[in-house]
Image 1 (tube, rainbow, N blue to C red):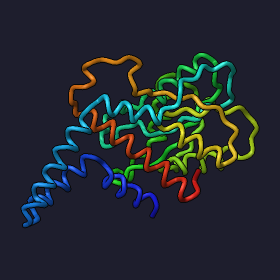
Image 2 (cartoon, helix red, strand yellow; image 1 turned 120 degrees about the horizontal axis):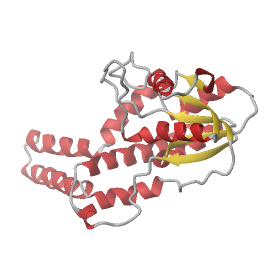
Image 3 (tube, rainbow, N blue to C red; image 1 turned 180 degrees about the vertical axis):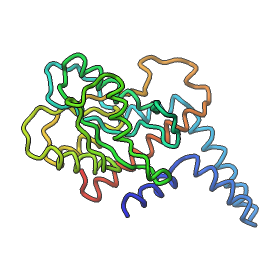
Length: 248
């Protein structure tokens, strides 16, 4: 139930949803004052949330700082959330902008920094209940040359809380040095979930979204800014809700 409710809440809090609701209400309502208000609100939401620079400032509140690793780890734990569902091409895996999670994990494995890669993630899309992201990522790892003996899979988790819970069940009380790998904007919530499950982990944030240098082009409205705000809004609400229900 929590999984389904979280998906509904996510839709309702998106800035684009506010625009649609405002414009629809401006047509439905018979009150001229509310018609004007709804249209003005929709226009201002478009102006504010299409600004890349503003979205980067919001991202910066969430992103953890880059980490320079100085030791090796027995397991690198990679959180899913990077496979594009609904695109089924034989022999191919279609990744989203969070692909750095798996790419950096493979790099760390090849460098000898991590001895094994643990993928955590299952069927997290309501519209595609038969697609298992964890299993898709395992197939990708194998195609990239990572041997079976270096791969661990937790394929039930549908959200960050379950990533931590089911990974803990999989590893049990095994001793080892664990490295958590996920997007920089997601690391606060993810690391809090894993530590709540009594994991002793180090973190390795990847997939940074905030440019290191300012460019005037960041002030030009772009549709990609809406995607940034979608991610920021989801993560901020996730932190609040997880705190309220005791997940972190």
